[in-house]
Length: 329
Image (cartoon, rainbow, N blue to C red; front, side, top):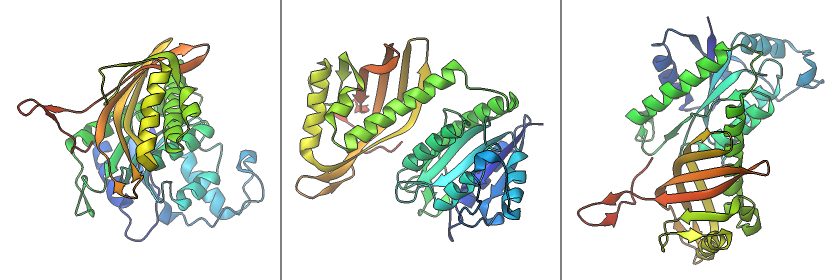
């Protein structure tokens, strides 16, 4: 039977990863299409990478490396549970991944992250790392907020939507793992990865206040239904003017996109999720921003996915006619 490892990516005292992994395992154990096992890095105390040869050679000289390799090789796919530390993944998780190569390659992987902002930045970095190792990273992921999914920021109490998201993530991990280690990414999966990288590029450009970097992400005839009036902004110059206005308000800006779900066709794709701008205003005040709903529509133009339409919205209270801006995804 297909075997899926649930990897706890933190060894920090007081970690919440054990709770999260237990929740994943309890939900997964209800399934009959795979066997699930928790892999705890506490049980595999690896020193800072001490192998003299690159992992690509597969020539492991130390006993702790060989034991770790034997553990990972037993599994057909993985769910990686990671917190976000300083906008990144824990060093112990990166170290454990770096020890091996072939044991990870071509295996499916899904991500469950947690943190003050859902661990989205850690999941993003972990996805890029796993794709570099030629793992098949599934599109669905779960992002748990310390503020809304942990009682008193201590005890995991995930919302119902996270249960549904986890089930979908497990569906994808099991399905891709069942295909076997020789499986290669489909055209759809390759396209989904490209869409994620494209949105990551927007995040990086916004945070760097890089208008030219943003220009490369949109088609020249982009139509934007942004949160600012008027009803629509037509053309790349109008879109960039909106971003330039944002940059005048912020001394430092953070842009987050959470729960991004791409769907890719032959030459058209779209993705939806939640976005939030936050940071430090020009007068030095820190603002947390508000979550909005975002949709990106793409066309493949000259071999590159470009955004031809995007839309930002907030829910509307019908009776008052006012937008509802205090919701968390």
